[in-house]
Length: 471
Image (cartoon, rainbow, N blue to C red; front, side):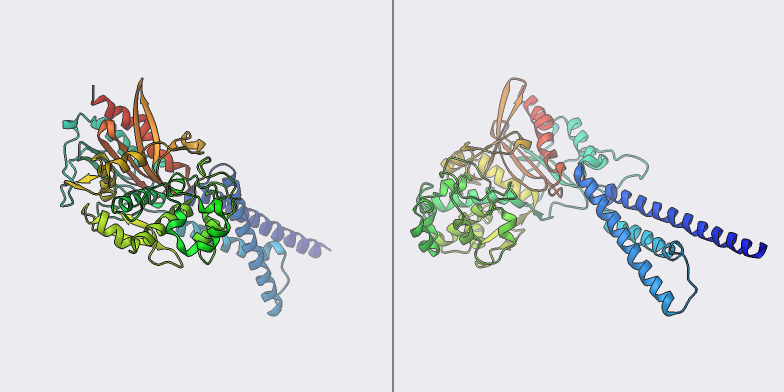
């Protein structure tokens, strides 16, 4: 009887030992899952809990599968029966190691700039490098720029996690590069994905097409330049009346809204579909009268590119090279996306930060570069005039020109009007005619709240700093 009691006690002790170990490893597994949130994601709010639930689900399913496999292997080998907690112990350990390895695999080990691990990065202003790309350089202090403000901004990009993944920051004033800073091993030669900032390039190309006589006016129906859809437009006279200006100002009236996930013309829906994207765009229902309601549409902008190609008889990359890039001395670039059914219609190009800044200087120069009129001054004025009010509450409902954003910044009681190209992830080209200044930011904060940091920095710090140089 004593022997049986002893065996029962030993079995119970063994069970409790395995159970406690399993509880420890399960708790450790859940802890690792929780740590993955700040380490490898940028989730906030509800998305934090969704990600945590996803990681815990991966861990739990993994433990369950490995436990089932271990159980059946034990049966096949005719091993003595063990408690489920004992069988699940090794799978639990294995999944902890797996989740840890998963975190290491996805963890971003890159740093903005090398500095002491236990200390913060300290910035010292340096004169930008003079390169053979048409840009003169200048000393910030000689233009009245307070380098203390620049120091604060740059150190924030390196030291503050709330401002991470910033790739470049350039400040140009009076046609001279005064500040040029790069991060995460990016350089002056690095090509950037400008995302929707490409739309402002399209605006320039439309202006050039007008100047060259390929397009007669912005009030022309875009259907004139898209003859391949003649049958569709013939059946829909309201769509046939949509003008180039309507497309430039995002007021086509079509049910295409990139900011509304339910919109049938949302860019993600169309990008994931096969066939002719432009045909799909104009096949959409008309929900507003053209020219009355702003509705952000990337496919609408691509339709303008196709119209330029049809009107000029040139592939868009060749058109841009001949009439824009070569005159500006832009040689380092790469086209990355083309329409599935029209390889002659690329819709995204990568440029360096310095070369993208040339587009801003072109507009400051009223369309001229080194004495050559690249695009008319009338187009520069018209394309950067407010024609619509956007629906972006996060940005304060800024105005919209011809594929250029319009922001007004106040310093005390003085207004500084600006216009900008901007794209997902934190790609910005700010132009301030009154300050004769250009600001460029690039980053990889795609679909992240940090992507508007450059806008806030420009509004709260850089514009006031530049305004002070005029007093």
